[in-house]
Image 1 (tube, helix red, strand yellow):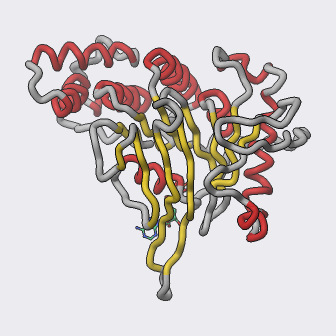
Image 2 (image 1 turned 180 degrees about the vertical axis):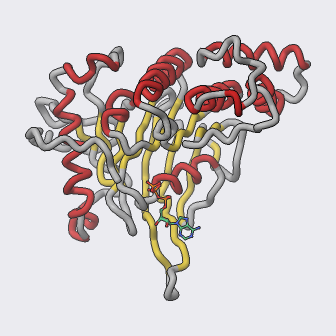
Length: 309
Ligand SMILES: Nc1ncnc2c1ncn2[C@@H]1O[C@H](COP(=O)(O)OP(=O)(O)OP(=O)(O)O)[C@@H](O)[C@H]1O
């Protein structure tokens, strides 16, 4: 079934409020993702992105609703779903090989030590760390540690890769290189990915679809932006594509103004089960999947703001 490999169905998250009652962080979120797609979630701090990712990981439970992955409801953490956090959380006493092999042997418990190590080495090489297998985390740079985290996550060959701002703690050069590698690996392996980022340019480079969430509390999924750039885009010249600024301005405009001004009337008008899908720069209204058509917005150049905060 390709249409709804991941199906987020009406999830909400509520916490007890300080003075009694409850605070609803986000509500009635519906989103379907196809196998092999790369989805980025963007929204301001506090709208509940990490909570959504934790629900997908099975590390948190929604107050309402459910999430189905590959026709099965999520009922807890699973080795079918790998998570990469901003901090790499490596086992400090284990080597690079030891960290990756530990994950591999958790997934394939009957494999021999040789099988586990061979498999782990393959993924260590894939992220460019061949030769560093016997180093411990303390001997690695931040970028190298994050590579180990990526190798570890990919080595268990998860159905879904979940990433929570995986590159935000890295310097710009390392961030760019790792973005390239993650994109290459995900494309080569057909990996299904959901990633949270605050970086609009990162989302445009990596994502097939960018999901826009309004500000919390009571955040909603306002819109899905279909990335109109060609699949074989390259980081060094992606900004030269004629549609680059159409999509960038659209997302920035949402973050700067629409995410905040999205009021009760907008929420009432929103079909939560079928959020609007837009393809910035598209000449005509688009009809994508089971979503209803939305006219393209005007893509007027605005001051550059690449970070949601
Ligand atoms: N255990 C908890 N109890 C009460 N409130 C919580 C709890 N966990 C999260 N929250 C609240 O839920 C809201 C959403 O948190 P979450 O971390 O998912 O947001 P986010 O969009 O990922 O933010 P950021 O971009 O800053 O990481 C926040 O206001 C947070 O304070």
